[in-house]
Amino acid sequence: MSHGPVVADESHLTPDEVEALDRRRRRGHLLTIVGLQTLVVTTLVGVLWAGLDLTHSPGWLHPMFYWCCITGTVSLVCFLAGIRMRRGFHEFTSY
Image 1 (cartoon, rainbow, N blue to C red):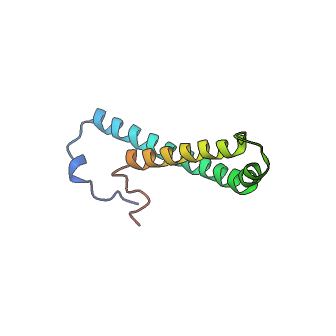
Image 2: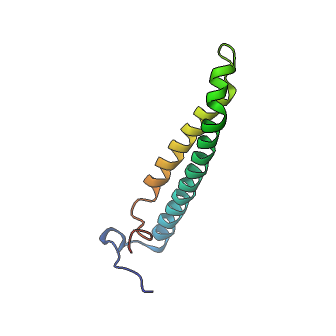
């Protein structure tokens, strides 16, 4: 399959700049995957244990709820950072 048209901003890049751009996009893809995986963990913890923990744990002692909040925050931050770093990468949206 041939490559699509090159974006005008990327047509005049040097080989070092192309490598830096590819490195940024690969890191963004990694962060997107980490964000999606921690979203799965957050969903499982939230559905299976956080509600029970909030109901039955005394006082401020809710470790599963706190873990659910932490993994949810990590998921959101990684996913948004990954999407931002993959900006301009049209491999999956081109067809």
